[in-house]
Length: 132
Image (cartoon, rainbow, N blue to C red; front, side, top):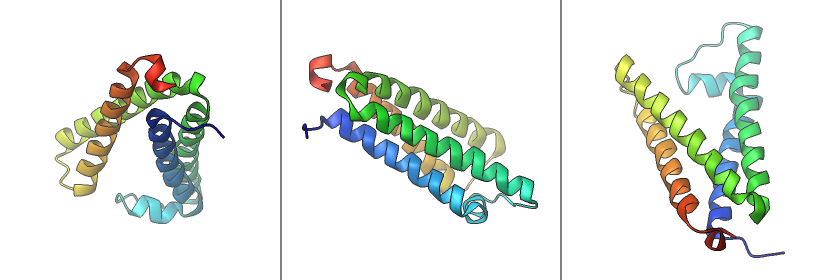
C-alpha cells in the first residue's frame, strides 16, 4: 500500500463525512429530517429524503473517495471539493441571510462547507508533485 498524501487524506475525510450523512438519511430519514426541522408527512416525502439527502450525499462521498484513492485523480477530487463545498456554503449562507435563520447548526454547516472548500483550494493550488 502506498502512502497517502495530505490532500488524499483530506479527500478521504470529506468523502467519509458525505457518506456518513448519506447513510444516516438513508436508514433514518425521519430523524435526519427532524434534525433540521423538516417534517415527513408521507411515504413520498420519506423516499425523497432517502434519495435526495441519502443518495446524493452517499454518491458524493463515493465520488470523492474514488478521487482520493488514486493520485492521478486527486486534483479532480480537490476541484470537485471546492465546487461542492463553496456552492453548498454560499447557498446555505444566502438562505441564512434571506430567511433570518438563527439555528446554530446552519451556521456550523456553512462554516464547515466553506472551510472545506478553502482547504481543498489550498491543496489545489499546490503543484502536482506536492499532491501526488
